[in-house]
Length: 353
Image (cartoon, rainbow, N blue to C red; front, side, top):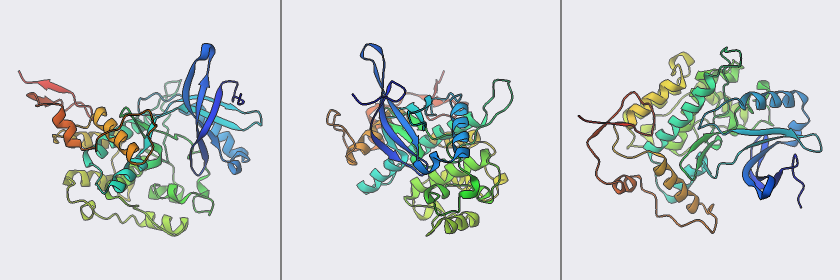
């Protein structure tokens, strides 16, 4: 039998690789034949030899394990293998990354639905706000800033659940290394301008990152480009953001305004908190007749997985995804109005008296 990490975690296959770690699909083995799917993250070899990085990686694993939010991927365990190398065990999210979801629409020659993109953005923003508002065991504010919000770190499950992953891993990376050749260029392109000057991370830096993510998903291309990390940093510092209207004529002006505000070069001109941005997106969605709940997101994810060839033989085929079909399938709307106090994609309604 394959050797089990920590006596209970079986590594099955490589699921993905980033600039700092590899993620494997794994399985927990327990008593009486109990098994459970998990994700196993291992630091890449060069970084595993860096004691400063490993010290911060261990500290971040401890701190992030205290975050409890339905849209944050949970850490189950943190340990060393027989060679002494660290590994993280996280919940396994069966689905696609936001990047892959966008890729499926591009492959299909269709535009990513703006309303579902906004709904996904709200969930990510709610997760970020929970981290930003963290309170430690002594009751004191102890915020955690992500610093690595990218389309690859947003997971969409087959059940329509949105999960933000990789909290803390970017913080363990030395900020001074972002312009070095070994740093992953794709991660640089989501940094807020002030972080390229080694400023401290804040809620506004994460707001900027989610603004970049939403812009790219809707536009279908990279926002900040360059042949090397130094060039990318230069475009970020210039922060010249094209109007999304140049790419999509169907986007509501308010949505473009929300994303533009998130991408202001001056952090003081952005949203003060991620919750404020989430509320503006939620208010916009309440004006739309199209459903954006987890069932609709789930149907879209299953469609995208099938299109990309990521489904397993046992999974049923799905029809082409069209958001409006899901709304019509729900039947005629009852005479309800949305409750404006709930800034969520899952609409709460109040029946007219």
